[in-house]
Amino acid sequence: MNRHTVARLLVAFVGVLLCLVGLLHAVVNVRGLQRAAAHGEIAERLVPQMIVNVVFGGATLFICGAILVLFAFGLRAPNRTLWSIGLLIGLFLLSTGVAAYLWKPIPSVLVFSVLGALVCVPLLLWRTDFTKS
Image 1 (cartoon, one colour):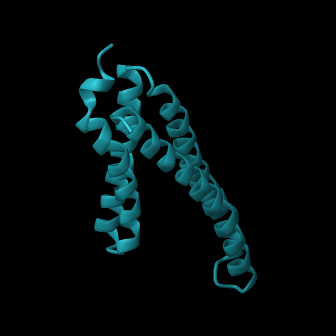
Image 2 (tube, rainbow, N blue to C red; image 1 turned 135 degrees about the horizontal axis):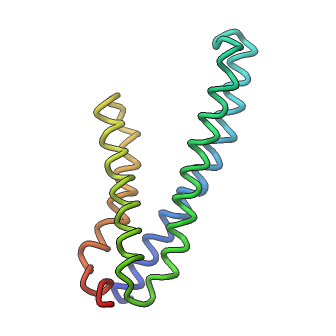
């Protein structure tokens, strides 16, 4: 496998994973919020706002994943703009994971940093291959 194929596969893998995580985030957390409200653990007046927040977060993850999947198909030919968009999404994921860990040191939030690194590392290592245009 050449470098383009490795980079495309990693980016596509992260994109599909983000799409799945986004869907799960929205579905599972909405049901959890509704159950918590029914048991009185959350004030009933706060539930609609929290549901919108959870759905927006899941949609954002899904959209980032969809952009990465589309981006992976565009990596066949050198394109500086696509390279920049992919790098930006990877850096966003990387920084989000680090910021979440600094805010609340739970090791599982570093998964986003790992996903961001999986996108950024091949793009940065082989940037000359992708930015020839």
